[in-house]
Amino acid sequence: MPLDLLGLAFATFVALGGAIGYLKSNSVASLVSGLVFGALISLSAQLAAGNAKNYNLAPAAVCLVLFLVMGSRFMNSKKLMPAGMVAAASLFMTIRYALRFF
Picture 1 (cartoon, rainbow, N blue to C red):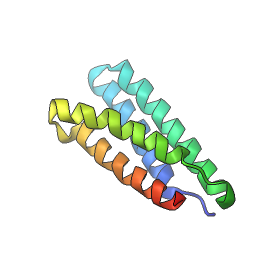
Picture 2 (cartoon, one colour):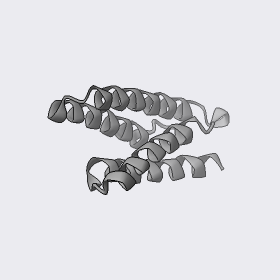
Picture 3 (cartoon, rainbow, N blue to C red):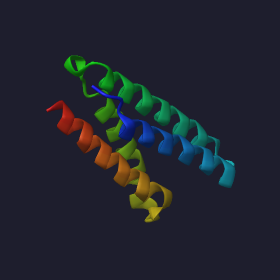
Picture 4 (cartoon, one colour):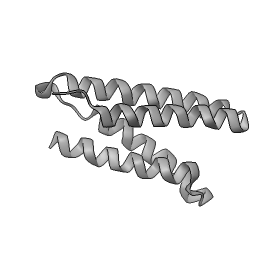
């Protein structure tokens, strides 16, 4: 399978979002969670692209957890940026990876 460019772009989006959250409001939690989730998404996307016969649900699981976390933050704050946008992108990626699995 070729490299999962959409998965790597999403991982970069999440990691950069965490860095921007840190720069805007000195939120260490945003920085750490953005970098951790970005790294997990990147790693799972690379593993998923590495061997088509050994595909698993790891990328979908990571994106689902991110969707649940950011979706609950969106429901509490009602702010589209950043929680709503990340929740929507995470839901899209979860569905994408789940469809690839099945």
